[in-house]
Length: 122
Length: 108
Image 1 (cartoon, rainbow over the protein chains, first blue to last red):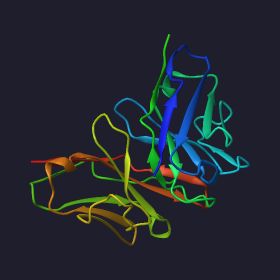
Image 2 (spheres, rainbow over the protein chains, first blue to last red):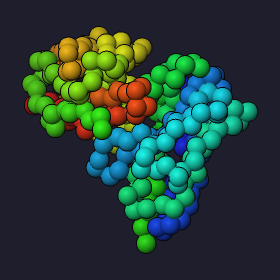
Image 3 (tube, chains in turn green, orange):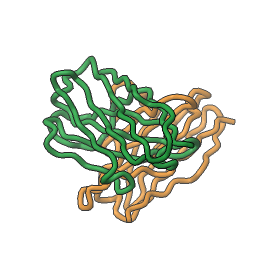
């Protein structure tokens, strides 16, 4: 089924930057679309960004477009989220998530990491 | 914009059936997923494509859809079923991935 381990979260001031990383294992990483989904404290789930298996197509939520960039390195079985111009409302647990299907983008989130916490505060 | 509605909470006695609804104006045209999230844990996919169970989801948990409402049913409810449950769709026409606000299931 696979495992995903996020890293890179922490405390950052408004306007600052962070780069999240996600290391995958236990499945053929290069064949699956990957996503970042976040959850603010006491709040629901919000899809943040996604990238196709080959890294050609990326998508972003309106709330992060122009500030966040998703990328992947299939040779390293890793996906990343570069977060710039961070705002207090970006404070959340960020989950790395795998798509259920291979190659096809299904937007079905079948394996989740434990999450990494990002806090944006002065 | 596409929005999904869920009841904030559902309470059920052990052994009974919990039903959680998910409404949306176009949900009949989109495939629905359901995720279970226990306190302090990451979400877990329990139903995809309206009614399909991933391996690991017990048969007590089932999904259905009629018109613009999807339903997650948990039969023979156990204490371990206490969790938040989220529905989710991918609206391909607008390329938006939408989650419902979540329903907290409490076992009495």
